Length: 63
Image (cartoon, rainbow, N blue to C red; front, side):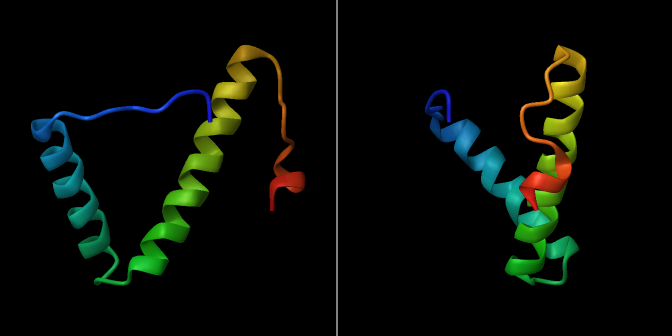
């Protein structure tokens, strides 16, 4: 992790609301929501790496 992000109370409340909505979308199954978030983050990281021209962790090595 490159740096730690500190949130103010307003940002924390917005993040909590988004997290609650994401878990609701998965019928309250927190583990299912977490797994999907990890997959989504992997796809986003692949896109960022491709844009920067340096694929640090090939997809097959992360799984």
